[in-house]
Length: 202
Length: 220
Image (cartoon, rainbow over all chains, first blue to last red; front, side):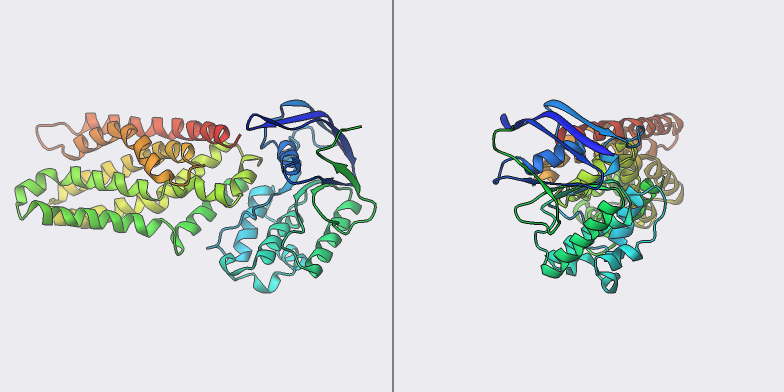
């Protein structure tokens, strides 16, 4: 599997966010998208998933399911956690597993993977910011999709949770997945390539 | 199908939990209708005459109450991004959310209407007809409301705009709903009731498509 972009451009609010952007990520690879604030990291991820219209360029996926769009084979972890405060931890995850997955999945292993299994029956309103983030990450584990698009995945996570996320990402890569992560700092993965936005593309 | 079932279960759960819209809608309905006899006074023939219209107006306002949060809540917490890019067709997701809203807001109004009809001096035949018109007509209110909810999705104070957009669109439903509910000899029941059914069927189709188009446009 290989996700490649040729000459991407994005306009938002009458302004060029980025232009002439080309990159490729193959299975088992991580691409770290870096750049100053406003360089278009989030816009790039939102463009790939189809939430922002592509102004120019071409985005293609080789080796994926031809019946599905890129977005339908990708997990998008945005700034917001997409959780309902009045539902419990388990109910929130079960909803996303049901909505994103094709069959009813067992959510318990995913809750264990992010360390929230003991809080399964707690309403999400009582979770801390880091716990909300971990619950959001749990849906990536509960439903298997080859492409992970992560926007600041480590923000609000403490050190041990960052380690845990790095472990999940490593497992995802060894299973043949690929990851694009918009980030300011290191995400704890060896051999990650970097795509720097906001500078002249060579 | 699992995606749509998941949406239905989630939205109904949220509606009946603390802060959800289900109970608020039916309580608002009861309060508005209860106030009318106090305002009009103990004039039983007059209450009987305007009763169906009052109940219909109250049902219309009550079903608007929780609508402004229908898509706005999903937009604010990021769920809408995932829903928009999901595999389930947006039109069907929107229709499912409308169904969940009707089951938790519209249906309780239909169930509460006969009880509250007693306050307005309605007799048994009038109540049966009224419940029937509300049962058929309230889905139209919800599904027309979907369009307004989708248009107002990105606005902070979307509720006011929602009312301004949706209320004029519901005029035909109100006219034929009240006309059917008021049907006593010699006014026929069949004609306005059939048109009410037609309006509901049309809104079931047009509402989700228009709302989905509005959502796609808004989220650009």
